[in-house]
Length: 248
Image (cartoon, rainbow, N blue to C red):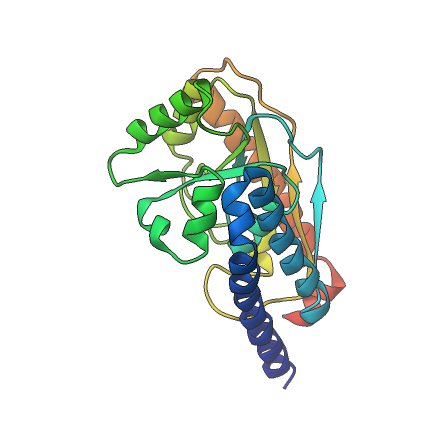
């Protein structure tokens, strides 16, 4: 019975989350199209709405740890579910992503990807897209900001092992920007697939910055070590919490 009630609450939470995406996205679209600053405000507002409703609807509180990056940096984050994106975007001032080209045509999501200067990438043409991004920033036609990347390339279930891809190291080298690693435990509560959400404290933690200048191998080794180690610590912390154990 308890599982059925929590599943229903999770379902209602998901319905309102996507409904509000459409409502906020459409209502704020004209101003967001005219102003990059307002577009950032809009997506940040939506993400904070999701965090707030998750807290009281399904008992999933959330917390950001570590200094929030505000300069032009790479954020290389562990990616376990949609909720880690929500947490990161809720606090950074100028988010942008490298995304699949097909997402440009998605309602609302595609609009705001364009407003935020996200970088659409066609299959097999990633290097070309990165070069264009760097050129656009240099000549002032694109906004600088925090480029969020997922070094494993996809969502990864808690404690599943997937290698860190060289693309993250290429971006680090080509942009010449510092990289802020980010660890998370959100997959413990919010899985990659399915409706059911668990109660507890979801955390994204920004870790000490990796400065520019490392070679690709050293960068990837250091990045993987710090992100995986801290993510394991955060997941163990979550699993030991009484609120989480009661929601299983």
